[in-house]
Image 1: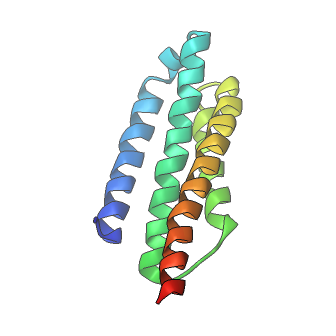
Image 2: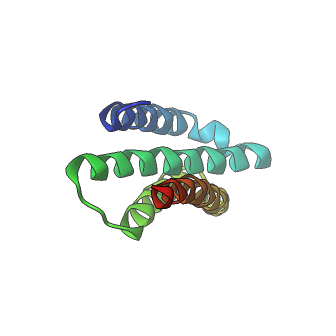
Image 3: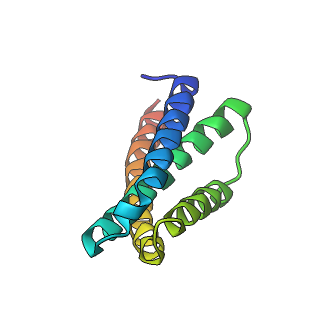
Length: 121
């Protein structure tokens, strides 16, 4: 299992590389409808990676902000999507909400199993 520091550094590196590539190719991403949707999807992946970075940073500092991390990561992803095309903002938001739902479901499954094991002992 990866440590939170390694995960934090990896997610920050992925965020900077993906954001740089998105900004380099924003003209191409805004050139057609399908590529605009792809730009929104890329921005939602930025949301996912930034949320991972913030979560690992909070774990290493021992601080919890709750929904503040989600709101901050979503805001940054939407601003990044807005630099490409206005439609990217909408698709980024929709894809991000799907990702957030799946992360919440997966977290519930993992932590639900941990609680069951703790109750047995």
